[in-house]
Image (cartoon, rainbow, N blue to C red; front, side, top):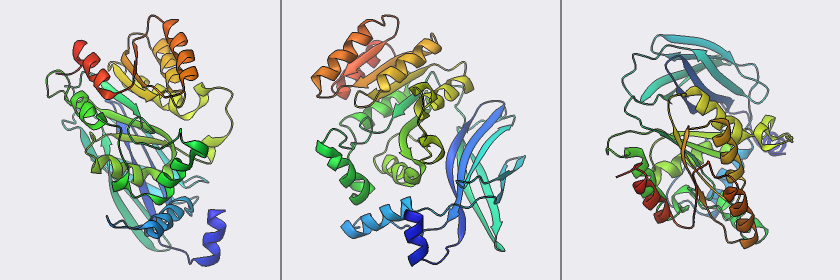
Length: 331
């Protein structure tokens, strides 16, 4: 729909690559990017209602390009990828990174389309040896307020389409708690962050800008493809969050994790299943409660029946801070 309208009122734009970050371990590098037309989205702090609406429209009417050859380079690493029907390229290559002594490493994506070359730099995360654990956090109503519980979800629409990133509000205390987790018990652990959402990749720039503006720890942002990943799944173990968390734990087999989410979705079920699949790998699970008392009673029953998993239901971030301090996760 968005693409059809765009083609009627717009001329073709230059073809570019939008990188989505990634991560690496000692033996392999993972990343993702998308080849599409440059929509020329710009942001100003004083953007009004119409400009925010226009930018939202441009994010969703992306004109992706299939079959474009993309060259990926990083240090002595070089590989060739081809964009799929949705314009995505997926980096999943053997690459020895043992000599890396920094947490973030440069990577370059390059293409030439219609005789016009384009190159863009991105960064890949490789956790430092000082890291004591990793943090995987949901985004929606765990980090950023979405209004998912509002009547007819009207606040979700207002926040997503009409509100500038600088006007979006984080959950109270979340930024301070996440910085504590980042520093760890020593104050210098440099524990890596992975932010997870079922929002589409079209919102990557928007959400990344929010995290940076609100001074959350720098991390890898993992979203969802509206097209290929939106097909109905038989259960949540086939869906975006479970699949991505599983991949992270398999990629870092010696690194335990703290999982943070909320009860508005099914984060509790996903995280409990992860903890069972990866015994002794999950240090703690923090789930923000919701006002729906019947839902919370049901969640509490399931948690009480799972005594071997450390799950904390919290109504405010301060409760998570107290638990984290008592268990030696933070100072």
